[in-house]
Length: 426
Image 1 (cartoon, rainbow, N blue to C red):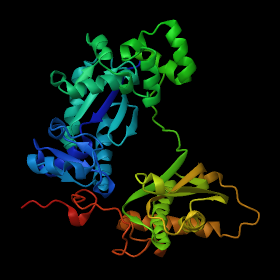
Image 2: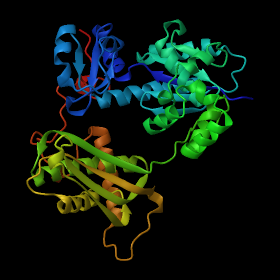
Image 3: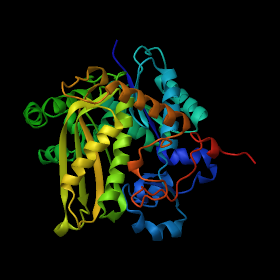
Image 4: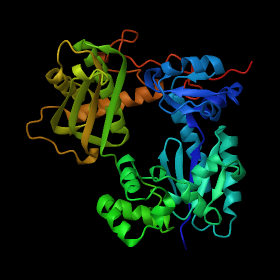
């Protein structure tokens, strides 16, 4: 039985989340900004029509925003994460196997639906997600994940598809592949797309139909990955739906400061906060880290004074203990800190992760690991029940006294995750 994949992708997800709780935004140009309200990370179709580009700095758009009445919001990750979970729960009712690919995308395995009108089934999925969450979704259906990605992109842009395109029966497959740039193919980055264009392959159709000579060159340059992409474009699946995603190889937490920071104590506060966030992610993944890396740098736009350093520390015992990780991170920061520099970013990386059930104790380890485990369980339980940051380490600084804190000046309420911000019906 040949496999069939569906890619469900939320339309302009962050903007759509804002519109669910503020219907007045429908039909209006809307953008959502990155951390510190720096750049555009999500746009409504109306904002796209005005020429607003993804990643555009907000300060460059001030004139356009005033002229066209563009509504601007800060990122509200608590809201978006919760809405994503609701979308995925709804999608899971339409397929036995589902792979959550990102916050707004999921692959569904529709194998075994050969006697079903998949276009109609896709529209039923879209309707259910819209009814249950308020989020509009587009669906691309094909024999492989790569083709499903292409089908989804066409479904988003072509009104006649009504949000669903089944490429397994479509007569437009050749024209769609011809209209898909190699840089837009799932899994092909900028360096590979430049290579392909140099050898005369500019779209997905040309890549699929590459002769043996070009195919051999592609395999030498891109390896197994390139060979699999060609197979997938031919309708031969090389990837299945991953219901159990592979464990993470590392976790990184960092932020860019709105204003540069020189003070070591303030950098330590920021770093301790990021370490706390990273350690919480580690525990949620049931993982421990063997290696910790601290990095910081000044503004990249001041190349003559640019300063970047990174310090890696091999931990004597793999750990998930926030306090222990904060101590090692602070020591690493002291080693790479240079007085007089105005730092724009600091962060931490946890690498060489392993399951927390496989932690090898050290012969000279004097830390009470059982007590540490209970302390972390209590910390997570309180923060889960009372809200993130209810319990934290003093070294992260006191609320209201953090000049390095990420700014969200235009953030909407956390409608679904905070009892005090639940919408009121007047």
